[in-house]
Length: 265
Image 1: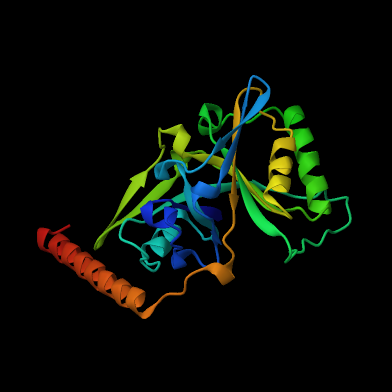
Image 2: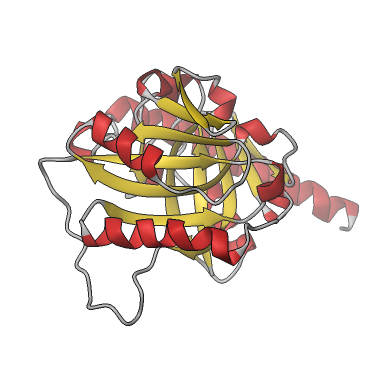
């Protein structure tokens, strides 16, 4: 099974601190450099960042695992970049694909171009699991295929509704789980595309030119990827802090297990 683990933003990621826990995942620049395109009544408008941290994704990675429980166990033991980290585990839906009858396309990274993630913000229909009709999806799929052939679109996927999602929250020496659905739709994303473009304007043109299948309002968010060479390394101080937090977490888990045995659970 395939899952997408979203790293929810907080004050540290919005300052530009990058969580090493998600390597080799996608890290994003803070939302003060982001742009949202909003289509209302058929017309596009722009909303420049920054946005409220609770609405923002700081990064994400793809995980293959036999079950959601296995992903939760993995996330619990990721390096603790900060005590307030929240990871959201989502089902991965259909990915971007080129038609089977077409010749193979090699997706090559252009080192002279920047990568951008285009998030499709969620809405009530997406959270209810209501997909657009097939005939409405066809123009978007054709746009995706042309973009793959032009070496612009590198990857993409829909995300399952949050009724099957789980959030793992780190709080000092403990972790807690929150099961979906998550009711505040404006905090959620319904899917993403990873594209490469020479400029932000080119990325905006790609996102604005996509024939989205939704009949009503649409909001997409354009975020630049922070490439690996720009990321902070784990300093000795960060490693020492992470080891202290891990020791406290392990001590808390042992106390919890001892208490359960004492009570006969």
